[in-house]
Structures are given as C-alpha cells and as structure tokens.
Image (cartoon, rainbow, N blue to C red; front, side):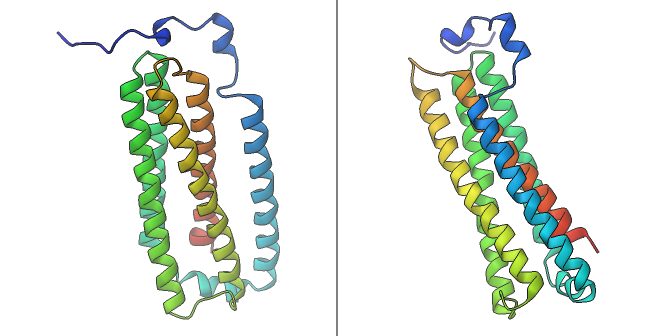
Length: 199
C-alpha cells in the first residue's frame, strides 16, 4: 500500500476544454516560434556560406568532437523526458514528484553547459576560433543556444517555485516551462545535425 501525496487543487480533473488546447499559453508559443524563426534564418545563412566553401567547412567539421556532440544530444533528450514526465506528474496531482523531475531536467542542462564549455576550451586551445569561417558559425550558434539554455534554467527555477507554493502549483505554468525546454532540446538536435553530422 503506497502513501499518496497530500491532496491539492491539482487532484480535480481538468475541464474537458483543457484537453483540446495547446500546453502552456499563447505568449510562450509566440516566443518559441519567434526563436525557431530566428534560428531557422541563421541555419539558411549557414547553408549558403557552407555551399560556397564546402571543402573548407567539411575539413573544419572534422575537428569537432563527435563523442561530446552525441553525449550532449543524449543529455538533452534525457532532460526532455524528465520535463515531460514532470508535466504528467503535476497533471496527476503529484507536485513533489514533478519538482524532482524538474530538478533532474535542470541537472541535465547544467551537464550540457559544462560539456559545451569543455568543448569550446578544447577547440580554442587547438587554434579554432572566430577567424575560421566554419567555427565562427559554430561558436555563434552554440553560444546563442547556451544562452537560451541558461534562460531555460531560470524558467525551470520559476517552475520549481510554483510547485513549492501550496496555493499555486498551476499545471499551465509547468507546461510553459516544458514548452520552452523542449524548444531548446529541438534546436540542439538540429544544430548537432547541421554542424556535426552534415558532410
């Protein structure tokens, strides 16, 4: 026999209309779509420059660490699993479980940043800097992505504060945090494919 968490307002089933709406709210989706448009435009610019200097870009790509890239991809995909599970937990009236899952997602984000910082240091120490056309794109794309990840960690902090508030625990706020976090993960998957895998 298991002991359930204390009953909260989350124990009440959502109204039927809630099942037909997008998770989060419109403002967050506008922000996410705006970021996707920005990154999409930058990817197009990258592809144009890559097409003009294909041999140089391909040669420079070989100096990236595929092992670190794959590890970071797995770390962020794992974080997406944690944050998705947190949304399900809060919807089922388990805010403490949701809080632990949000912490786990945030820990994955910190691991990603540490690995990326190590990779940046490695590339710079080998002489691959903004003076190289490929690496100028690499550092800008990954740098902006890490900045988004740091903002994502701050948003997860807000989510944790909400989950700890007995009078709050709004599933919609957790969904907003999860929506932004999933966007960060999606962007990394595309960055990984474009910078590390495309030959």
